[in-house]
Image (cartoon, rainbow, N blue to C red; front, side, top):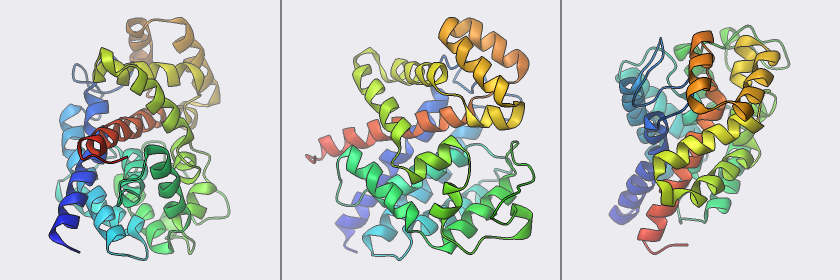
Length: 285
């Protein structure tokens, strides 16, 4: 790898990881961490540290892909987990962010357009090796997300060790918005990105908040469904269609409701905005 290629991967990885910081900063986002208010188990400083881990994973994934690695997804997730441990993050801050952003970084060499980037990222996830699955399982075991319960199905439970199939097959069997995004071309992420792109003249914070509220009113959140039941996710979607941001925030915080899957998707959409700006500044597509 030439110095210019290495520098480009640093720039691309940094641009794509920026969504992991900008999304949690944005206010208002009912029930979520923002620059104004945190949650019981994490706040904006946790996300600032976590952004560093996502950035390291993204840069590693880009470098590995540029060097022709067999599995840049595995390389990126391993670097992410090493950084999480090194930074002392002992609870899940944003594993879903990493699961969406690291593949985008692996797909970024050559600076493809946004839609091609998402298609290539999902293709890399589907082609990934069992080493990527092992890294993902280690992250689940280390961070112990609050929604992680006993798994029953064709794959081994996290407590039983890593599966012998690639990450694409693992995620394809998980009924989760983030997992399905990573495998199936980032469909919701692209819709959120288009919405944000149309609102950038109002400011990036307004675009992020608007994308989250739109998703919340149109898509049941899979994290909320797993942690509080499917009925809660449907109620949240209906409330987001009827109530203002302040009223929603009061209601969801009082119940401890967190639409974490949708927030991860908004973070990835924000990363696409940052990536597109970087590519345009460099005179790319």
